[in-house]
Amino acid sequence: MPTNHDPEQAPDPRTQRAVGPAALKALSHPLRIQILDLLGHHSALTASGLAELLGETSGATSYHLRQLERHGFVQEVPGRGTARERWWERTPGGFTIELPDEEAGDGTLTATVTVNREFEAMRQRKIMDFLDGARSLDHAWLESGATLATINMWLTKEQLAEVQAEWQRFSETVLDRFAGQQDTPGARPVQVHFNAFPLINGKENPS
Image (cartoon, rainbow, N blue to C red; front, side, top):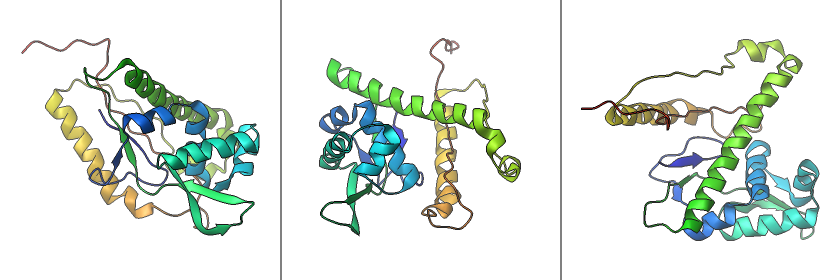
């Protein structure tokens, strides 16, 4: 089950980078995941800017940025910053985190669960923030199609794969058109969520 994480768009699955065990272990720190998340919203930040947003010291955010850079998750913004003030951004493209197979060690399994749970927890916090703060938004944003929806279905494995494939096609034909709009007048950060997974407390019908 691949999990995709990208700050601007749903990337082509053929170009996504698979996260190996070493990079996965490096990512399995809540503060590093929060840094990636913030860079996705703000496009680029300095260690000091991240520290202010996270309530951390710039020394701590600098250390975690270096670890993320080492494993290819972030990079310095080309042509921006000085020797004293470096600007950082997410590395272009997406990455996937696969659920480990039966041969993977306990450490890999723990790191995978930790990373995926933290990404999901941040998504849930954003939904709660939206519900709590919706009244502060221009009403036009609420009328523009802001939606929280859950659809319960019974599907076969093949049908679930078809749904996922249709979502990928939608990402490529619609969402990709709106990528890279950080400087577009009137634009603000927006998240689009898509989850499709078998319920653990369900039971497969007999053939």
